[in-house]
Image (cartoon, rainbow, N blue to C red; front, side):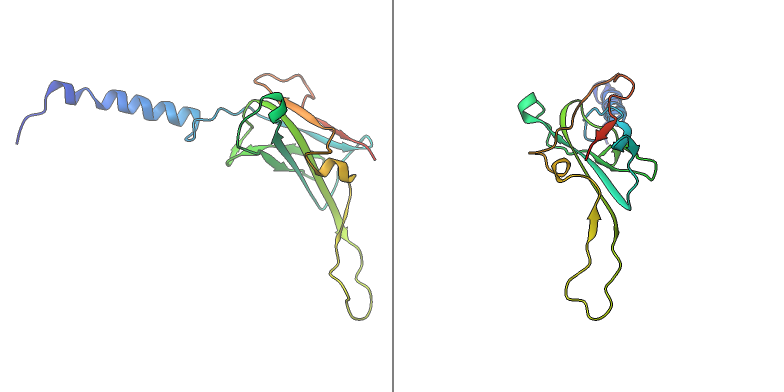
Length: 153
């Protein structure tokens, strides 16, 4: 068995430093910043059976990330965005898509001729990237309320 050379013994330190750096930045190496706010509909917190906020990268404004952060809206209208299971979103401009549904209406008496559907609570324009008027820029230090989403009928 050959003794280890001094150069080999010194190699674990840089490798450990690299691993620690990757862990600190997240395993995928993508920096994210916290994104949370309140969704309101006509000035009132959005209360829905199910509501989702999606951030779609705005390529026209230079955001080339392949990731689409998103989160659910709670009963108080609050949301927090996650990217790959981590809280936050990569920096840049995003188009914001919001969908929300209420409970399905009552079932009709007699045989069902179609599947019951939930009622959409927000105008359709907010549900598609091409038509949503909502946009946010994810930055390290946003102003208070920067990620609040005011929806109108």
